[in-house]
Image 1 (cartoon, rainbow, N blue to C red):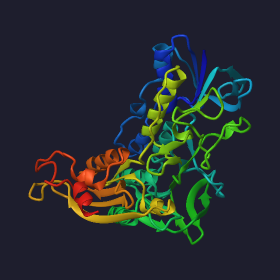
Image 2: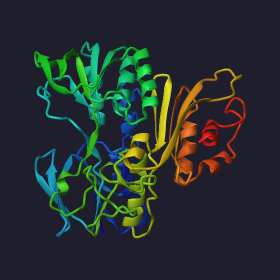
Image 3: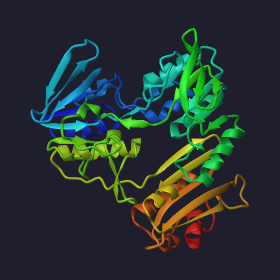
Image 4: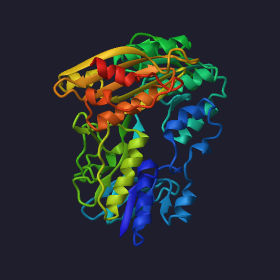
Length: 443
């Protein structure tokens, strides 16, 4: 059985290892466009900020491990440009030699991830303008920061933009964030993102909101200004972090069905509509348990799970991906910010009959040293009392509450069910009524 996997990161190698363990008769070829396998993309901002000393620390397993320990034909710098679904063949270019290649398959997994969005701004080729998606991207930023870079502009106020901004400030840089939206962190409800904005401003970040970047200007071939539809701003360096899109363009003409986002549509077994072709990770859809439809939420946790499940099914066994609840958490200076389920805007878009409350709580008993406030927004479906979303922000205790809510949403629990949960309590760890249960009682 010839198994070909396009993409050597989380989803691709999770699948490859499953096939390697379960099908000793399988010949496994992995085609990776870059030179690094299985690395922690989520750790890149912390390498830029110096919390992670060496980029090698972000690599889970080197290419040599897969070749020598797992018997996988793990190729690097092999870019796939086409798939012939009828003749079961992939083709592309060996980027080292420039020569074309082709590989036949019996089973194919598309695990190509997502790439950074970089609009065709005038001046985008100037030195000092960076994207952040790979270890080489991060290494280039770190190297560039040595060039007397004091003022950095980050374009985009989402997860990556905020984490990059935080780490650059901690590294002693002056940072500006420019975002087309009228608030940063706008995947969160307004009451939460307002607190993120306050934390950004408290740490000296200059926020330019509601402006659209149009071009870059430079001096001696290096960026010196970011130009928007309303003004221009000096910059020694720019990091563009306005989102990602699935790497699926090479599937054109295959007949593989795509989501409006461009992600490959998959069923619970990671199968596409074309027999023998699977997809997983940031290039594929994820079924959202609250929305009850396919969604595109590219996160490393999903990629690892989907890759593992794809590999199990490619090996002849049967296992289903049960879907996501939309959980995430991030650090932003002294705050932790988390969410699970859907936001209020998403509930409106879905036409749901919902009720939402925002309330203050305490992470631990109020009389304990180190106590700090939490702000929580909790939302339920009024038709059945089920929890459908929760967001929280505070200095400590956010991750615990988000994970409790994520578990509740996954299992379709009502707010009454949540009141009855037996959640651990001792004054250094919690309040007698957990903050999540306090909200459940009020809804």
